[in-house]
Image 1 (cartoon, rainbow, N blue to C red):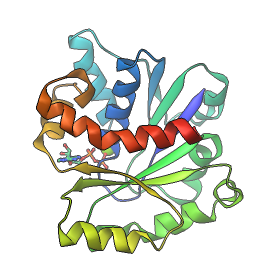
Image 2 (tube, helix red, strand yellow; image 1 turned 90 degrees about the horizontal axis):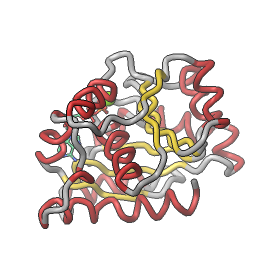
Image 3 (spheres, rainbow, N blue to C red; image 1 turned 180 degrees about the horizontal axis):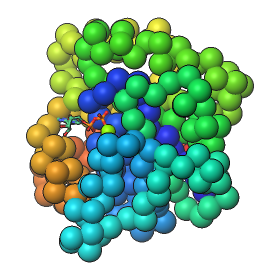
Length: 210
Ligand SMILES: Nc1ncnc2c1ncn2[C@@H]1O[C@H](COP(=O)(O)OP(=O)(O)O)[C@@H](O)[C@H]1O
Ligand SMILES: [Mg+2]
């Protein structure tokens, strides 16, 4: 199984949004994908329950179960792991041990990035990351391209050895669709297609590394 980890110590940065849209994009492309919900708050699980109401539920696994997490690489297809806020250090290790790629969403604000700095330093120190066997990328979420906040954030993020592989725009579409158990990839209107474009560099990066 290819394992994609979505993690950041900071809450509200878009971990669940990133994880569920990523999983739905895989399903939309006809690929075998599971969601692993490691957050006791269960947001990804609730999203999937709503999804089941319109017949598009994805296989979902309980990522709080560490035995199950360790066994993930033996499975088929792709697993996308959504993790809780506040995670770091030893709690993060079982996930970093099994992941084929890790994505860290960050918001374009110096305060948010500074709050995630210890987490990013911890990820950079992990032996698999240091050896280059676990690729890590940053996703700038709720980006407002061309604003000084976004530019300043990109500047700050250069302090870590991780590429910024996508800038996902700030849009109510994410909030509305996630609340309905939907994703950006369930729609094909012009407006949604522009949002989907934001994800293409991330998909290309995952294809290359994961
Ligand atoms: N790109 C975006 N544009 C606008 N709102 C977003 C975006 N990404 C996430 N959100 C909203 O921000 C809030 C936090 O996102 P969420 O994915 O739950 O973060 P986390 O899982 O890191 O706590 C949610 O209300 C979500 O709908
Ligand atoms: Mg979440």
